[in-house]
Length: 379
Image 1 (spheres, rainbow, N blue to C red):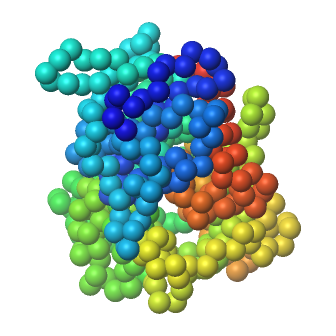
Image 2 (spheres, rainbow, N blue to C red):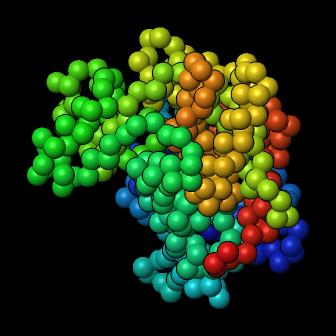
């Protein structure tokens, strides 16, 4: 979107200005772009004045096209934020709350006041508290969890420690810090091998199944750790949990009410995939999603209650998707909490809420309005 084509500031409260942030520096850049394209297509332009802001892979902010098709997957090619539009900066000044056009040849020009930000960013440098901290400094309201909940949920080791401390059951795991792997590898291996085979080796602070390996032989452990470290120096190794894969969406309550849980969804991975990897999630359409999951009412209620408990334990706000394993004996183990889950209409979180009576456009609208209700600063 060229600067000349931007709508003028609209002072009326009926049409607040939304800065939609997407792309970013993480390995989930493309998925963020796809999610943003879907939001652009669904958002009610009569109710919201949307300014799309693409963040390139090297971290530059720029005005982006408001054409949803520019952010779609085409012929298996993933989209990205090109940074071709006018360069932007966000003023870390709570009195301004403005995006500023940055032009080296002229004095920076204010683009306009932003009322609420939708940081539709996945992974590090977006979902992990970094952008949330910038928005807090700028005094801007935004969709989603705050600094601590975003950071703690992004790091799988800290997330599991916090959930366990709150009395929620998580699977057995070992965190592998880079220094320990480099200087005391034998001790790390001994701790990991105590988990038993198979194990899953993951980057601590990544999502979308990027950099994950299933290890069924200890000979494969070191290559799996090295692959994970190519995405994040800090690695987590998790013991396999036998059971069904369930996911549940949680939304912050409106008007100060308690958080709400969606119906429970079930992921069934095609046997051609050893686990729910990136290709199974996004590219080949082989994964089956059942919404709602075929569960006894008591089990569904248990999972929904645990999802809200996990949301509260981490201090989440706005939205989260909580992932579980359901053991054959009917007990649920929390696997992960995602504070900015995949957000295409085909993603689990929006589908779960659609099955709960909140369709995709209404979900986007609710998230923005909830963010506008929330005060800035400590809360």
